[in-house]
Amino acid sequence: MTPPSWPEMFRVFGRIGLMSFGGPAAQIAVMHRELVEDRPWLSEQTYLRALSLCMLLPGPEAMQLATYAGWRLRGVAGGLLGGLLFVVPGAAFIAVLALLYAWYGQLPLVQMTFLGIKAAVIIVVFQALLKVSSKALHGRLGWALAFGSFIGIFVLGLPFPLIILLAGAIGMLTKSPTAVAEPANLPPARSLRTLLIWGGLWAAPLVLLALLGEDFLLQLGLFFSKLAVVTFGGAYAVLAYMTQTVVQDFGWINTDQMIDALGLAETTPGPLILVTQFVGMLAGFAQSGPSGALAAGLLALWVTFTPCFLWIFLAGPYLEALSEQPRIAGALRAITAAVVGVIANLSVWFALHVLFDRVAPGVTLALPAPVWESFNPLAAALTLLAAVLMLALKRGFVVTMILLAVLALLLRAI
Image (cartoon, rainbow, N blue to C red; front, side, top):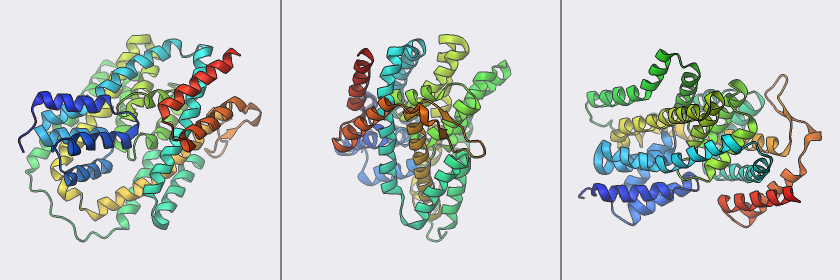
């Protein structure tokens, strides 16, 4: 097939980027329609294998799928075009929203509006839990891994990367190494060159910040770089770990701001992991105002998405062989099952912090303890309404969020 022209590539991938609302499932469906159904750029088999590869890699799978599609069509330049057009529209929206939130987010009317948004976020995370669990939990091992990861992170406070590593190791050990496909016949120098170029680009701002003595930005860049390595299972899975670190360990933002960040990221196009940009901008604003917010947001974007290009350009040529590795597939299934427990933790954590004004940390365990006298009946009523709208009436998040935000404002005015 003759590769599509650059103007056509720009138009199609730009449209995908602007229409990429609704999370990974909706984004993957949009790409399938644009790249497989409406034009013969990718075959069904190639698309599904690419999706399997992106599910295996850390990072946002929909953005990586767009990168792979562009790379498959027009090489590295095409991959850059596909990936950037998927991220840039949403990143521009987030930048504006984060600055507005930093300036006006503490006003009583704004806080009341966000109570409605938070109620919708609880149901969004619960929906993600239902969707992932229906696909990921097969057999006793899957359920055991999900339950174990929930106890590990919610009760014991184990770090998210440790849970992912343990689940992956268990998955690999439960699979036979037989029937492995032949490795891709590619020169090692090509992979090494890709690793050095993109690994160097990833590390360059961190090295510069270390040399300049910018401790806050360096700490932020190193943390979000770590997230880029352990983000298996999508943004919902890593949010619990990110929240635990940026709220409890670093104190960059508070719990309410973290929930608001997710709510705003849900309303913009692009991958949900853009929440890292929002968090980075709020943390940077608290340090040094708008200039600090922009610097921290750009850094968060760089260390979140540069690794995505590295993974795709490094692993793309090996797609056929990787997709038939039983132990790698077993590790992926185990990690996905463990992610169910992590998302369950996030769902309970969000609900507690929205429904109760005060939640005390555990004394000997990580298990949070809500202060029952601080129960918020209005938040509970809004959450119940969100459940009816989204689960029973099948209304989308954006419609539900707007309705609840307006309702909360009207109740405030009464």
